[in-house]
Structures are given as C-alpha cells and as structure tokens.
Amino acid sequence: MNSSAIWALTKRELIRFLRQRTRVIGAVGQPVIFWILFGAGLRTSFKAPSWAEGLSHTVTYQEYFLPGVAALIVLFTAIFSTISIIEDRREGFLQGILVAPVSRLSIVLSKLTAGTILAILQAGLFLAVGPLLSMIGIGPEIDVSWTLPRILMAAAFLMLIAAELTALGFIIAWPMNSTQGFHAIMSIFLMPMWLVSGAFFPGGDSGWLFWLIRINPLTYGVAGLRRLLYQDVLPVTPELPSMPVCLLVTTATTVLLTLISARMVSRPSVHNAA
Amino acid sequence: MSEFAVIAEALSYAYGSCRALEDVEFSVPHGNLFGLLGPNGSGKTTLFRLLSTLIPIQSGMLHVCGLDVATCQSDVRRQLGVTFQSPAVDVRLTVRENLKCQGSVYGLSGAALNTRIGEMLDCFNLADRASTLVGELSGGLKRRVELAKGLLHSPKVLLLDEPTSGLDPRARQDFWDLLLKQVRSQGTTVVVATHLMPEAALCDQLLLLDKGRRVATGSPFDLQSKLSGERLTLRLRDAAVSQTAVEDLLQCKTVRNANQLSLRVSQPAEQIAMVMNRLGDEIIGLELTRPSLEDVFLELTGRSLVSGGEDHE
Image 1 (cartoon, rainbow over the protein chains, first blue to last red):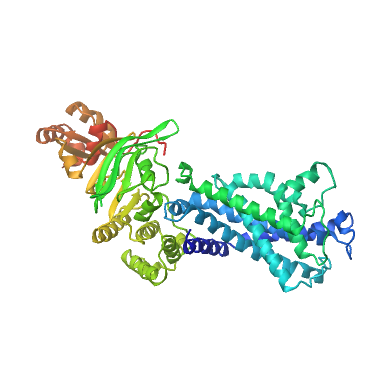
Image 2 (cartoon, chains in turn blue, orange):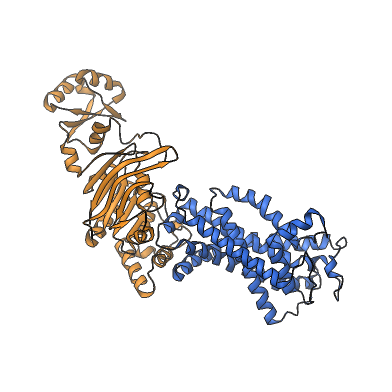
C-alpha cells in the first residue's frame, strides 16, 4: 500500500468531481426534493413506529425521514463515484493505473476515500441546512441543538456508511462495461435496498418485510445514524438495533466489501484491457 | 543482469478457445527499439497486454529486465512505462495534473517530481500547455502527453501500442523525433506494436507476427534484403481500367491503391519498357524501389499487412 499514490488518485477524483457540477445537483437535489415533498405529502398519514411512542415529542414524517435522506445522499454519491470506474475503463485511464506498480488495494482505497469524502460533504451539507428549511416554511420544526461531540460522531458514522456503500458500488461497477448496466442495478437493487432499510418507512412487527429489513446491512447504518441524530435516547427494538450492533454490522460489512473489491481488482483479466 | 531487456520463450495465449498467440519466441537487447509488426488479429496486441501485465501468463515464459512477468508482476511494473493505443490520460485534468498524478502513482514526489515534470514538459514541447485541460489539446499533443506520462518515471522499458494511430503524418513525425531523441539519450528499451511501415522501418529489430505466430525476426534491412527483385509502382490516369492490361502483360498480380498499381518485378529494365510501350499514354509516373516490409510480409504469409485477418482484439 502506498499512501501518496492513494492520495494522488483520490485528489484526481475530487478534481474531476468539482469540474462536473451537475453531479452535485444529482446527488443532493433529488434526496432533498424527496424529503420536502414526501414530508409534506405523508405528514398526515404517517404512523410513527412503535419505538417512537415513549418519546417526549411526536415524531413527524420529515423528522423520521431525515436520516434516511442523508443515507440516500450517501448512496447516490457512492453510485456516482463508482460509476466513474466504468468511465475510467472506457476512457482508458484505468488500464494506465492497472499497469502501474501500485497495490491493487490502493486502487480500491483511492476510490473509497474519494467516494467517502464527497459523500460526507454532501450529506453533511444536507444535515446542516435541511433543518433550517423550516424557517421558510417547507420543512418541519426539528430540534437542532446538536452538540459538537454529537456532530463529530454522526460525521464519523456517516463516513463509515459512505465507505460501505462506495465499496458496494465498486463491486457492482468493476465487472461492468456500460453505465446503463449500472443504472439497471441501481433501480432493481440499490434503491430497493435503501427502501427496506428503515430509511423511508418503518417496517411492520412481523412478516417478510420485517425480515427483509433485519437482514439488510444498510438498516444498521440508517438506525445508527438515527440514534446519533435524535436528541432522545431511543429504545432498542428489532427494527432499531442498538448502537454497538449498528457499528459492528456496518464496520464488518465495509471491511468485507473492501476485501472483495481488492480481490476483484487483483485478478488480471482481458476485461481490463481496453 | 541479463543482456536482454525482454525475453520470451514458447509464449502462448488463448481467449477461451480462440488462440491469439502460439509459441512465440524473441529477445530484445537493452536499448533496442523493437517493433512488433503484424496486421490486426496477428496477436501483437495480446503480446503487448502480456508484456504490460494486464493479462496473466498462461503458458511459456516472459522476462522483463530479468524478472519473471508471471511471478514478479509488481516489480515488472516498476520497470515499465506504457502507452496504450487508447488514451490513458484524464481529459478533465490539465497536462500538469495528469503528470503529477502519474508521478505519485509511480512513487515520485515533492521537488524531484516537479523537476522531472518540468523536464518532460520541455522535452516534449508542452511547457506552454502545462495548465491546459488535456481534453482541449489536439490529437498530436495528447499523444505527446501520453508519451511524457509513460517516460516520466524513467522506465527501463517503454511499451508503445500503435502510438501514432489517428495522427497526421506531420504529427507522427514530430512524435517519433521527440521520442527517439529522448530514448536514445537515456538508453531506454522500446517495444512498439505497429502495423505502419514507416514506423516499423525506424526499428532496430522487428518481430513479424501473423495469426499469433512468429513469422520472422531481424532488422528491417535484413528482412528486406532477403527478398529478390524490386517493387514497381505505376501512377496511372485510371488504374482500374489498366489493371488487367498490366497483369496480362507482365503475368503477375498487382495491388491497386486509388490510381496506383504496385507490383514486384524481377527484371525491371525489360518490364518497364514493356509497360511503357503498351500503356505509355496512361502512365503519369513510375517509381522503382527496394522491396518494402509490406512485401516481406506478403512474401512470408501470402497476406497483406494492411487488410488484416479476422479481428479478435
């Protein structure tokens, strides 16, 4: 592993991102619009999950949805970051890196670092600005008296989710030749994965949906983020796992996905030759 | 250290059931400009990929600077500079940013890297374009950036795959002038895959490939000297009309290219006289030259270099 090589490749990703402004709009715009519109539309019909019953205040839909939107921004950023693998391959840049004397893990880590930096910047921006939308009347009142340690913890956890989702995107993007293929996977796998993570709606107390939510690793990311963003201490329920469990599952998934990515990259293949 | 920069023995490669390279053997002395010459589908791109460590060694042996490509991939990569046929520069980065990224990936840093970038920019006449986005450069300049990128870390062996494809003759000439000046002064070994005659003619040694097999090796001069006779090129008012007449008259095959007919002749004086007598008014010009590398290839394989076989690359 070579840290200056990782940083050089990361820097390249960041420069490319800054020179393609539309990517920012794509990754942040849609989740924010979802948040405002779903929040407004579902406000009256939303039934708060069972764990919210004992809280000091009623959880509105927009408040419930807040960590989910942050997770969606992270997901979109991870997707855009890893789609660049397919572009790099097509444009020829990738094979130039593959013949260079850098460890294959460094190549993966540079993508993860860039994806993570971009994701927490954008999700962080949303979390900082989102609650202020209530001032102009399109968001609900959200208690934003977050303390510095809490912000740092939330940022650190957001980083972990970002690394997890970027590694997942890497595994999907690596074998692909076209960005269209990636969009298909995004529609039938990544978006549903986000939908059944407790981000968009609480699951029931039983049935297939309940189990789907429990086996989804992203559930633990969203739940952990929810715990760090809410002022109240939330109870532990099957759909809202405890913080140590959230941390453990998210870390383990991130490490596993990163190792799989590095393994994929180290296999020499015709696919890598343009 | 071995006296050869690259050694290949019994090298074979297959994409599934499609055999792309069979039992190829060659060696490249240090500091040599070595050409892989063949039409599309001849296996030269496969050989190039094996050399650049992009695809695994399936059978046979390939050594670069005394290192086994099959087992010491990452050490081999350190010795190599690679310029692919498809561009490997990032078009959204400036020339300098591209070189910086490349240098860091190859372990250069700080002042040493900046000095080296300055040298490369000067050497390839790119200094005034350092802050331009690569995407805004002309094709010829882009190729020079590729080359500067490939040579930035002073590799022992530079691999070039069809380095001037898509360039006009002038840009091609510039590219080679700059490249040769640089590699000759540094003693860099260069392996270049090409199907262009003028490029092949510049090489010290050539490996002629056809359908994945080695056809011949040797210097361009040696290869050309093996062929007897000469090449006659006729420029005609209407080559399509005159082609049959010329072929009937001289009892040989001709190759037509626009209004030019080209053929091998063994007794040029008599044969030119015959053509002049018969088609005098039709002829605009004629030229007699030594056999080209194209002729060598045609003679050895019965196939033309330009219109290749099936393309599986």
